[in-house]
Image (cartoon, rainbow, N blue to C red; front, side):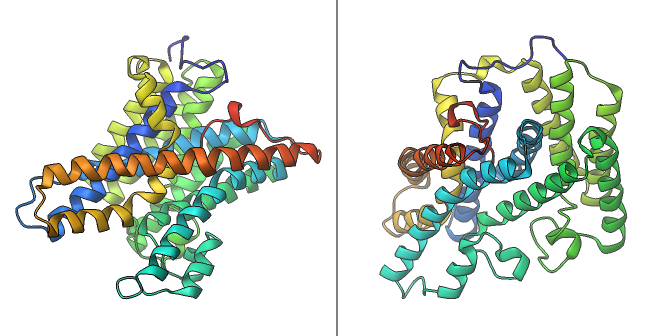
Length: 351
């Protein structure tokens, strides 16, 4: 890889990763809105199907970021608290918004109190409760990855991550051949729900890219799990997913090598900064807005031109009002009690 690598800001952030995160989140927004349009509205002009793979790009970024984070954590507690402070405050507020909406409009959205309570733990997938908002499925996948990395850390296997990764991929390959796992579905499959076998290649690729980046060389040993992961996806999930996966891996390699620096600008960095809140709040409110606009005969293109900026605004408000101050407050509290939490300004934003 290029010795120049990614550009780091004065606060220690990897700018290209922020850009990819923002573009991935925007792609998911367009995927959901245009899919909703093609499903429910007459003569809808297009479906941005490729945006679905923004979540897969999130997982690659997460592999890179989580390895980076856990390698710098003194204890498991430091790592887990950093993840808690990152994920939960904005999630709780986004969930609360849906609850308030349901209370105010029970005819359209009946209040499912037990469902909201279980969803508040972010553990609903593991007790077979549906997600209040379908985008939450990926958060469960993230939590399992954190658990896997916690186990790797506790057992002292961080430096053997290549062999751990190859074993994980082998398990996914065997499971997929025998049980035909379904991506983003089949919650009752142990392989899907508890070992995230369909998504392991993406997290693994991110970790391998981090090892290449941190050691400033493209060691063949780190390339092997990436290639094996792509092969597993091709055999189990088919050609289309394989092709998109190869494109994601190539894009990420370019970013880590410093070849996407031309994409770094205030707009893309801002988009990356609000990517997680945007992901949390865009879907259900956006669908309701699009339905209202369609009922009032607003054109499809204009509806998108209204719904997408409003989703961006909602993500921005949630970011500056909840995500950033809560993370800063929680990590300051943790450090004051002897913990070693990264300052917010120096923490890579996770998915």
